[in-house]
Amino acid sequence: MRGGEAVRTKLGELLVVSASQARKVQQDILGYIVTFYNGRKRHSMLGYTDSNDYESVVAELSRLRFLN
Image 1: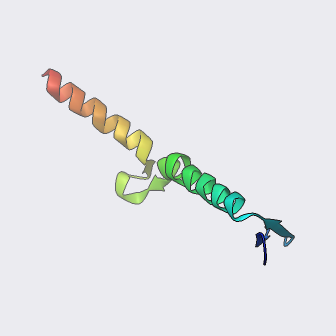
Image 2: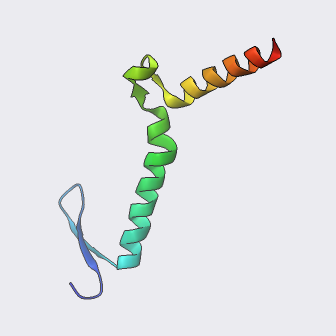
């Protein structure tokens, strides 16, 4: 398609966006996944806690060990 990319929405609508708009959307989605979703996703290896909470606990335990 000349001048843009065809993108199908979740509702099946066909949109035409420029390549730079498509890249921006992809970057925004990846940013969301990396900064928010992955940190809040629960992991079985971490006792079904999310990685943000797990890292907080580990940091606190390390701090307490350092103080002793």
